[in-house]
Structure formats: C-alpha cells, structure tokens
Amino acid sequence: MNRIKELQDFIGSQQSEITEFDESLIRKLIQQITVYDDRFTVRFKSGLEINIEA
Image (cartoon, rainbow, N blue to C red):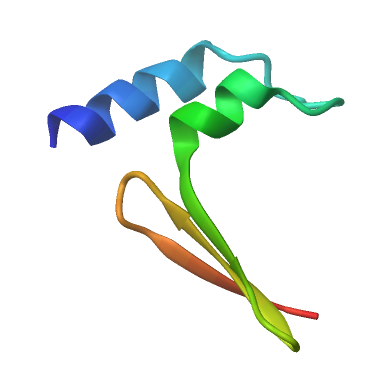
C-alpha cells in the first residue's frame, strides 16, 4: 500500500500531458514489458498488468 501511495503521489506531481519519452518515469512505474507475436503485456510495479493487442 505504501508503494501504491508513493506512485500516486509521484504521478500527481507530474505534468498532466506527457509529450516525450521520460526514462525516469518509466523506471518508476513499469516493472516489465513482455512482447508476444500478437500482443504485449505491461506489468506495473503496483502489480497491475495490461495486455495490448497488436
């Protein structure tokens, strides 16, 4: 729960529109990206996973 709160605070402090790649933001939020032939999965450090179809 502390980690989720920390991530929420960090996201809240960022500008609302991301216009370019921000490596420090990615490193704080994303744990792993897995690429498959037809989709990829993004696993966030909070434990949330999102599947994106290609």
